Image (tube, rainbow, N blue to C red; front, side):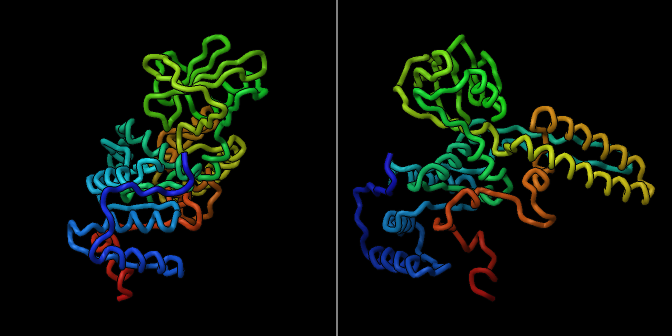
Length: 351
């Protein structure tokens, strides 16, 4: 692992590229907020930007306007920076039906969604990389501006394990449950299993490898990375970090405060609906919200948890939700590909 970008390519900047690389690099160093790189298809704009990222050595967020283009850029940057953290962050829904309510017929349509497990893993790998490493490039779609949980909570609640660390096995198990991992013999991503003094965890960000924790009394005697399919040990670890199994992780004390705030807002909405003579709507709203509150209280999670994100993060009304951009440090680079198709003309030209 390195903390600086290393650009690997058989090509060298040619033609207008050296001038463009120098101009863009100097512009960012002079704190220019917006710069535009023009070029026809196939002129090497991605290679030019890769050189700028390597020159400045800052984490970068590359935004594309669809998943196909994002996947193409991800492959290109992965080839340019094979020794660095190049990650992929797009919407993980294969299918999504939002919840809806039709008052006229008292019809409630529950939220239904199918999550792509591979893309969910890549999203966790992306947030983990940007929190842990400076040499990170995340290629994302517009999903990067959609709400996800607080980076402070996601980082603050992760579990750090070290060889020789004094800790009780049951405390580790309790912490894993708090991080929304499921105990199951069906060993897959987001699960853990226990076999005597051995605990095996399949991290949310991992592809095929998992972590084995061997206890001796109240000490961690061994820490290993192993193949989740064969069980074969890959390497011994001195340290391992287990991140939450959901970006919507919230500390227990915050959940208690959030439940109080949700209950207050529910009371206001019920009062409004009853004054308007909309008794059935009020009843349905109360049923749904009370059920979600019970789920939050018991499990720390519920379907449609994003509906309560303002209360869970303690934001004021109208304050924007946390998104992937909040996970980056202040000096990161944002590169918008095909900006003419993504950014309104008024923002790009001032008109």
